[in-house]
Image (cartoon, rainbow, N blue to C red):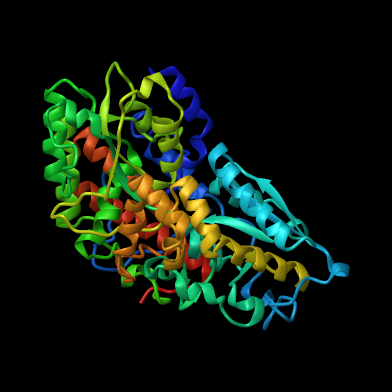
Length: 529
């Protein structure tokens, strides 16, 4: 193993699991242990119990190949929506300078703990402090989105933060909790910067027509590979694979040439993207109706589509031919990336979150490490069955809490809006690999200069900019989304690694997911049609 690079990657691992929780045990560590693994992930998402019988397009028989994943006990009931103050909850004038006699501290919980992320974020905090000397930003770093939710659940409301960084995937869960207020509640209207958001990002964060959080650190999955290996194998390094068939051809050729016997590195989450992300390419929702948006209770689940079955069978075929290096749950968040530099059994490709780009570019081009001499990072959009485009937005967003102090709430809102300004977004995206969330940030001089120097950074932005703001493209908006995603991960892993029939296994996953959704709907008072 390339020791020098491994040591550096270990220090930046927190950002590499950005697009979904992976803090669970490998489901193949013990036979028939899906209950344990799914239950652990369900706790990550704080999914409440639900014992209702599912209805919808798929027959709600009990799963016949494994038990429905357990979910933890429902957490203590948070303040209800009725407890949230009506009308503006911030200081009266959004444009006023904070009174020197009303100096305040904004407490922020976030998980930006790696060197690259910390440096970039600290620069933003310093810039805000210079413009607002009477507002102090107190940062409390947590280990991840999962731990942040757990910490909040166990904290006395008097000690809640003013801003909370939560996963995009948990938007419905956080909005339903009653703990948070939407940005529009601050001064009675939504921040004008929301009008500049990329449409797919804005609609991803919108619940029943209201944008509930500030989308600050947004990422999306991309295909990463070493272009130099393609060249060494006599292939065109500029030939980006747009389809799974094209990717398989490149993996086969580069493996046969002896350049990367590990082929394609895959793990539970990247296998699940063949179901969840490719649904965007092929224009179908995963839950009915409208992926759970617009306040609809969920009527059914659609994982076992022809496209999803074909994609998982594609991956299973590559694995059976020895062209896939399987790294399980990718516990560290960068196990797949390490396989790209493992000189003993090197892989050439992986699907990974764009949030890692800043660190990878630094390692490949700026650190001068011998292990990466000659490497040339390639980044391409997620491939699909037929070359479709689009991807889901992942990453994190900042959630506003009303702790009863209008000055503090207003200061928190000002800071969050500052983080969405073109200059802030351009600088942060250029340093990290997160996507500029507004058109103005994408046009900023810092962004365009970064893209000219390293075109890899433009790929995730372009992928999201081309994605329409439709229910299909904005993903599942359901309370137990993280738990449902784990259900998909387990099903995908069973198909790829264990050779389970793809359609049958996805149909089991549909029933498991619908049961989780029904339990959540009972807890929040929703009813199925």
